[in-house]
Length: 163
Ligand code: PNS
Image (cartoon, rainbow, N blue to C red; front, top):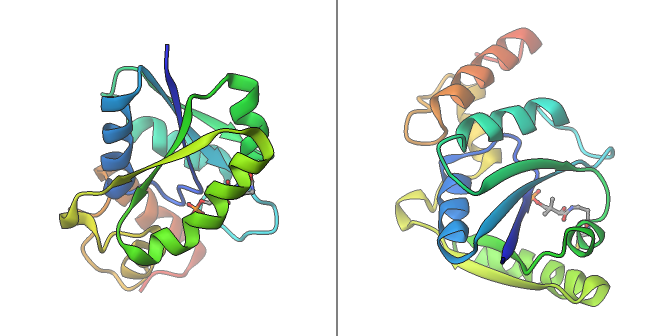
């Protein structure tokens, strides 16, 4: 049984992430979407909300589950016997950021990272940009699943950050 781990902050999960998870699932029997939590980072959604939104966005995919991974990703991969880490790449800038992480995770646990090229139609979709669009009242259709769009509007209006 092959197991892929798809890690990220998922603050929040986007249609780009969903695309990468689908591609991972096409190659591996089981996929764990690993929601990382870094206490030093300022998130729009807390860890439980990020897990919940990812679960709702991926509910129709068999063989995919979502877990909170608060510590070192390499340790989690070793604990669950991951076959590989799978990451989606939008372009060369993503590769530059991912290269060192892939080498570090392999150094720590021996686990290889497999990169999948995302759908080019989603190459502009990044959680940070989507949050900026949401803060300024832009249309989130085709960027995030509907439940995420609704949660973003609510979170930003509660925080008084929205337009
Ligand atoms: O979505 P992101 O923020 O680009 O994902 C980065 C993430 C969460 C994959 C990375 O920061 C991570 O793996 N964090 C868990 C802690 C860890 O293992 N850090 C060392 C990474 S080599």
